[in-house]
Length: 211
Image (cartoon, helix red, strand yellow):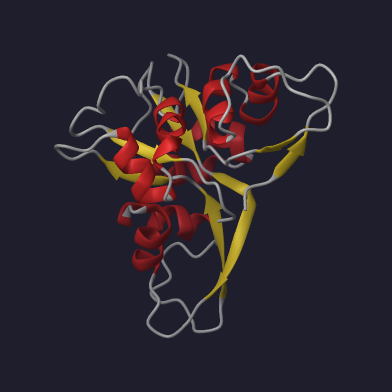
């Protein structure tokens, strides 16, 4: 399950969104994950689910991928992580880039038949993110992974491209088994659950379980 948080004095969904996501606008997503309106008055001691939502960064005119990698990872050579996760070759002002989490990770033991491309699709629904896995595990250029090898799984929400006829509630039913979590997906992607998601839009599903 996703991490739990016990409400303290003064907490609101907006203050908690700023604390956990560095973005108060994620308050709607946080409230939706807990089946509450964003304006709900929280009770001290109340337990909340804190879904994992991949951090975003809005690119400025001074930003470069190398500079952002140095900023977020302390290592400019990790820029391919940002490039692969966002399907870009360079940072463009105004873009909201996903910043995969390379610290709060899970681990996976390699079994016979496993490949990096398979992991990228299984974990992120995005074969291109095999580069993210390579960089996180310092195995760039390695031809094969070995059975029994332990790999780091970086934090990054699963990718989905909207198809014709899909609705927020259908996507919530498909991914979470709960159509009432439609607002969680919409808010995390800065959409409105009052309108169908546009065909072709790239969405990312917040994690409500350990990844």
